[in-house]
Each structure stands twice: as C-alpha cells, then as structure tokens.
Image (cartoon, rainbow, N blue to C red):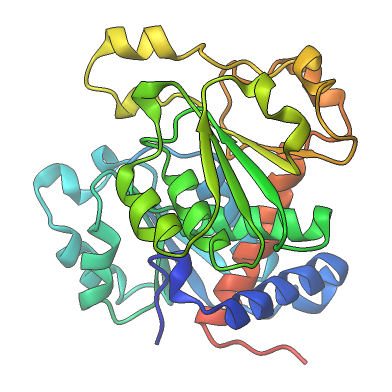
Length: 306
C-alpha cells in the first residue's frame, strides 16, 4: 500500500508513467468509466476547498466509484476534539482510499502512519500540495510537450504558497529547468527551498520584483494569489494583495507560446481580459486536474486497465 504525501514520493519514471496514464484517460475516458465500480473515496477536508475537493469527487465518479466525506472541520467530529489519527482509523473501515486536506502541516502524514487505506495529501497548510503539482506537471507536459529545458516564472506569494513549493521540488528533478521568482521582499520564496533544493542541486534561479523585467524570458508564468488565510496581520495582507496584476499590456511582452498557469482561485491577480488570450491555460489546468487524480486513484488502488 502506498500513500501520496509529496510529489517526491514518486520517482521521475513513476511520474512519467502516471502522466502517461492521465493522458490515456483524457483520450479514452470510456475505457476507464467502470474501473472503480464498488470502490469508495473519502474526502476529509478540514479547511475550505472548491477545485481540489470537487476534482477528487469528479475523478472518482468518472471511474465509476462512490464518494463521501466532509468539507470543513466544523462539520466533522474534529469539532468535538477527535484526533486525525482516530478519524482516519474510523474512515478506513468505510472507504478504500482517502483524500485529506488540513490546515496543519504534517496532518496527512500522521493519518498515513495509522491508516489501513491509501491516504492522499490534498494540501497541508503552507507545506505541500502534491496533487496540484501533478496537475501542473500534466498541464505543462501536455501544452509544452516536455518538462525539461524550460524557464519558469513563479509570481506572487512565494513564501506561503504550497503549490509553488511543491512545483519547485518536482521540476527541479528535470534537466535544464531555470526558475525566476517574482515577488515583493515580504513574500520571497523561503530560504530552505533555495538552499536545500536549488543550490544543493546547482539549479539556476534568480529573484526579481518586477514582472515586466522578465516576461520575454519565460516559457511558463505561474501566477499565485496573495492568501489572506496565511497572514497574521490584516494590514500586511491589504498592502500586498494587489502587488501584481497580470493584464494584456504585460502579456504583450511575453513569447507567443508562453503559457499562463494559476492554481486558482484567483482574486484579481489576473485581469479577466487575459482569459481570452490563447496562452491562458488556467481553466484547462482544472480539467487536467481531474485526469491526473483519476490516474492517481487507479495507481494507489493498484487497478490496472488493459
């Protein structure tokens, strides 16, 4: 039995196999429509989510399986003080696989240590968001044709953004990748990411404040929102939330084949006018998220389709 806590839980070869499976699901959805008949997915979401929770549920339904769970800690026995360990032991009696989102870093890891079913980390605080990373990798590979030799700009909240941290760790394993970090001083990528991942692997990167200065270099621009829920000080949030807004004027500086990604939800960091640009890939990214979660469920349940 395997769990997914981090994108690094899969080797590069295993990631390629997973993305190949997701691509086959995209091309031949009918082949997979009943592969999880009789299987049940529990979605244990201790904090709000729209895309991730619904994407998991859509993925399991597309495979013919069933779903149940809760969408906030207040609607679970956590409100009565039940521990994560006790909750997963109980859920293991009901479900075949579980997706857990929790505001505390490491909570899904605690659950996996006592679970008798596969546990998928659907986001733990500001730490990891591995299934969003799998979605991002599938989006990049599908639209750019490769995961290596790319210049990737990550813009916005790079300090608290778990999607950014996970994506950097995953892409750092591919040859020829260069990172450009675009953020205000207060939201720079954490030092441990730079030291433990990039500098340790001799991976080129640079940090800038102005998005306009690097737009012509980018193959991919990964925008993120400034997350109110990660701030202790409301004044800091208000001061920084509109620091970067991507609009058509900035898009005119970019390559014709650059793609714009965003883990969503967006607030106002991407102007609505950009939605009509063919390089805007963030809603296609959502659809890729369903395919890759279908592939992940099949992989962890060890369901093989000929």
